[in-house]
Amino acid sequence: MEREGRSLAEAVSRLATEDALIPAIVVAELLAGVRLADDRRRAARRRAKIDAVLALAAVVDFDAEIAETWAELFAGLERRGNRIPANDLAVAATAIHLHMPVLVGPEDEVHFRRVDGLEIVVLKPLADST
Image (cartoon, rainbow, N blue to C red):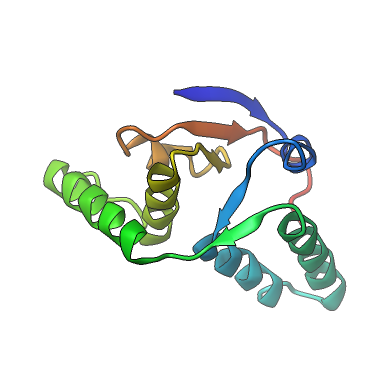
């Protein structure tokens, strides 16, 4: 199932009215972006965006139950020759385990489409992603 795409701003503004959780691996990826910024201003802007999202949504740890879901998904994808990046698989496993959709950017959509039973919401592209 797929929901209509929305921009990041729309998605973040709706977090206050919808249940939203953030897998810990997503927080790690976002924080890596802060550390890889080419200047302090860009790093500060990125960090402010992360903090704004974290103020509205709880972080979900990758626990043993989600690891079971991850292993099941990994085995199925591996058998079909459809392996996806491990971090994306952790996000998918978290979403499936919690019976929630996953919010993805258009560039990552193809990975998540390989996961059976995953509800996907695709963000509209942004003009400036700093």
